[in-house]
Length: 464
Image 1 (cartoon, helix red, strand yellow):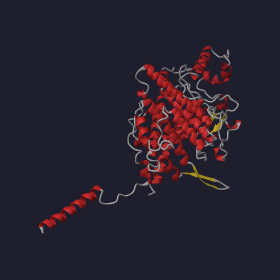
Image 2 (cartoon, helix red, strand yellow):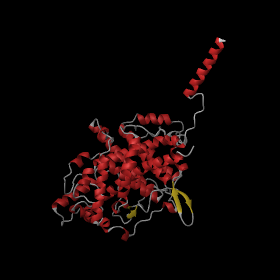
Image 3 (cartoon, rainbow, N blue to C red):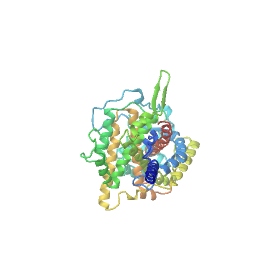
Image 4 (cartoon, one colour):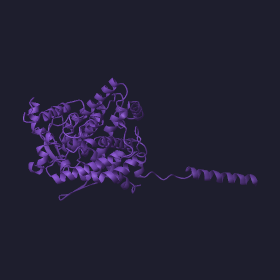
C-alpha cells in the first residue's frame, strides 16, 4: 500500500514538473508579429544602442517634425538626371508600367530661389553656381572678390577630392530636371524579377568586399551556406562589416517602404495604396526567410544610427548665421531653418549615438587604404543606380545613396567641420544644396521605415 502511494505521488510530482517546464502541454504557436520581430530587439551588433530606444526616440520625438520639414519647398524639390546611361551594361529593360514613371516639374512649379542657385548660405555662396560653368573651363569671374574667387576654387577642388563618396549628377546637364518628391513618392511599382535582382546582386557580390567563394544566404547558389557566410562576416574588420550592414539596411528600408505603400486595389477612378502584410512577411518573416528577415531589420536600425550620428556632427555647419534654406520666401526660409535646428539639437541629445572612432583606426597607412577602398566601393554603388530600369526606383535609389554618401562624408570630416569659420565661406568643408536635400530625405526614408515597423507590428498582432 505504501509503495503504491509512493508511486502515485511520484507520478503527480513528475506531471507537475512537466507542466511547469512546458513539456507536458503544447506551446501556443508563435504569432505572425513574433516571427518577424521577436529577434528584432535588444542591443545591436557593434553598437551600445538598443532597438527599443531607437523606436521611442524616432517615433515620438523625431518623426513628426522631420516629416514637416521634408514637406517644405526647400526639401521637396530635388534635381536629378534620370537619363544617364548605365556605365556597366547595355541590356537594360526599362519598366513600362505607369507606376515606374517620374513626373518632372514644370519650370514655373519650382520656386525661383531654388532655381537660381542650388546652394545659398552667404552672399559669396549665392554667386557660386553662376560662375561654375566658367570655372570648369579654367576661368574665374573677375567681378568676384578675391576672397570669393579663392572660395570658389577651393569648393571645386573639394568636390573633386577623395572625400566624396558618391558620383553626383551634373545638375547643369540639359537632362537634369527638378522632381517634386511629394508628388513622386517611393512606393511599390511592380519592378521586380531578374532585372531588379541583378542590381542588388551586383551590389552585394562585387561591392561588399565579399569573395566569390562565399555565397549569400537565400542566394540561388548559396543554399545551406548561411553559417559559412556569417562566419566570414564576423571575421571581417569592423569597417567592412559595417559597409555590408549599411547596404543591407538600405535594402531592408526600401523593402519596408514598398510593403507599406503597396497597390492594394486599382479601379478606373482611383488607386488604393496601403500596407501589404503578406509582402512584408515574405521579405522579413523569420521562418519564410530562414532567419534572414530579422537580421535585415536589425541592419536597418544600424543604418539609422549611422545617419543619425552624421546629422548630430554636422550641426555646426547649419548653425552658422550665414546659412539659410534659401527659396526666396524669407519668412518661410527663417521658419524652416529654426525647425531644422530644433531637429538637429534633438538629434544631438540622443543618448546612445554610434561611436565612429573605431573606424579607420590603427596603422595610418592601412587605415588610409581601407578608407579609400570603402569610398570607392560606395561610389561604385552610386553609379549602379543609373542601371535601374524603373525610373521612380532610380530616382529614390540615387537620392538615398547620395544621402548615405553625404552622411559618410560628414562622419569622416570631423576636423574640417570643427575648423569652419563662424561666418563667411568655408574653404575646407561645405555641403551643396543637392547634398543637403538628399541627406535629410534619405534619413527621412529610414525614419519612416522605423515608424512603419511599428505599424506592421500592430497589424501583425491580429494575425495568428
